[in-house]
Length: 290
Image (tube, rainbow, N blue to C red; front, side):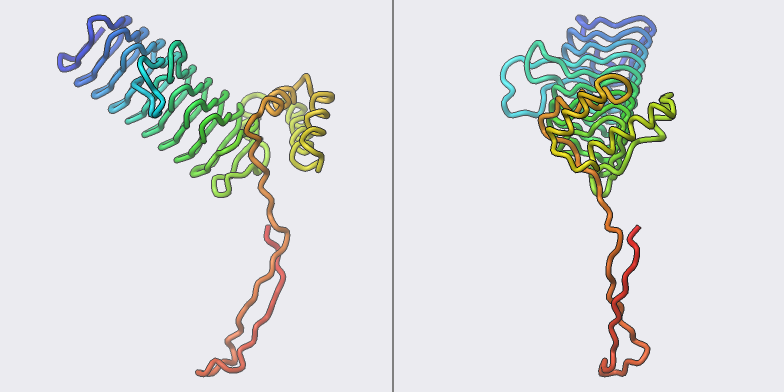
């Protein structure tokens, strides 16, 4: 164990072996820090936080502390962190609103600069939260999710596994598993096929997920009809996770992005204009819009 003399470590904290604690860190009471963790300078671990092994906390990170919620009274819950996570500079993770609840961070997650995880969130494994990502209270994030820079996720939303959300997107409904969300529109623009291949999904599994995607977003069926068909045709196999996710949604799901096939442009022809703007011709043409 290596503790900088300028760090403040409460005597009631439980510090594992081979832990490094840098200058000006503050470790409060009833904290558990697992073996092999590394805390750079100015890291704060609040009371009651439980941390697994071999996590890295960069300067300015704050784990724990009271949630940003006006209804918090008395003793709040805590934060539990798994193993092998990286918290870059100024990441904040807040405690759950009440005991015995906990804000949960799984294993092998990478939270980049200024990312914020609010009270009662549940973040799975192998996720990447890019700079300035904001998770509202009670948000659930699956596994192998990539949230782009400055993505904001509304409270109580769920982000399905192996989904990818583009930077600056505003998420106010559930994002199903396996899809890509366009950062500009905040709408779904197809399956996350690169992520699926990297995760080891076979060609046949991806083909089935394409069938499920077309059924959900392009069949024209009602929501009840979609759920009924999913449960009858995709209750097992690659589509089962999508089926279970959609059946459990309470906020609805993010819609698919639709592009216009053609559009009209009005073009001003100035070839024969004079200083009084006479004889201007306006031509209307039709072009493909992608």
